[in-house]
Image (tube, rainbow, N blue to C red; front, side, top):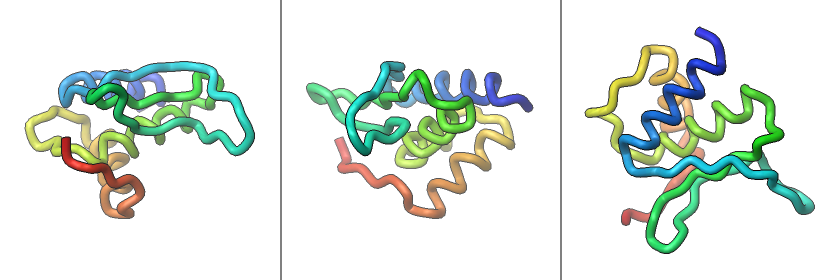
Length: 96
């Protein structure tokens, strides 16, 4: 499965769990490729639009790893990517 299709699938999963995906140019010293945040009470994952396809997929998977995805359909490959981030405990959030 190619990265563009996985990215689309992860974006759709974000929408299903109520996370808005925003692509923007992230600037500043020490900026990463993006991540999950809460803006005015709503979850968003902000992704640097200049990131590589692999980095974009990683940011989305890391954000999704903090949500219950049991009722969300993901292909086996996409689910594995999210599971890697869940198992690593890479991104923890406060409950809404």
